[in-house]
Amino acid sequence: MLTPASHAIVSASTVAIIEPSIAKAEVSTSHAVSTAETELAVSTGEAELVGIALTFQGRQKRVRHHRDTLVGGVAALHPSIPQDKPLVVLDKHGYEVGSELSLGTLRSQEDANGGSNRILELKLEYDEW
Image 1: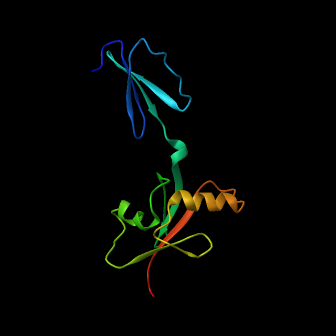
Image 2: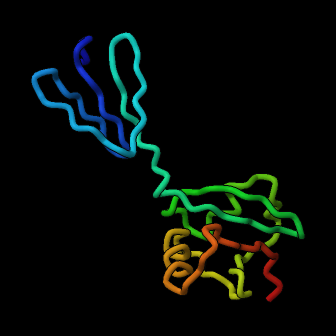
Image 3: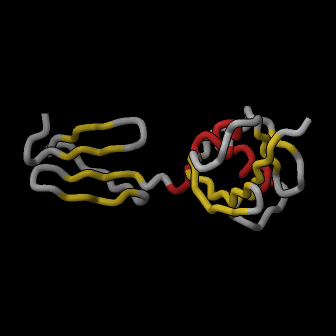
């Protein structure tokens, strides 16, 4: 139970209640949010997000998704993209990207190949094969 002097630390996967007798650790990637009874440190998680320039039928949208998002699930996250036919994802070089790969894996590959653009360029197309 949180008391007025207790603190809650909230991250993507855990919540820890810290009593006043325990020293508080500062987290540089957190923002503090104060309320009357508690102080929440919420991780921004920016390092876990991947910026994407998503192109479909000549229109482009810039979005951010979690690095663990699978390529095969990207279209489903955008309800404005009709999914009446099978879709494939292509990278900026025109290669079809496997649906089992994560966005974080693609971002890491771009970085390893000397990619200077922090935005991952992906194109959705109907699978004509």
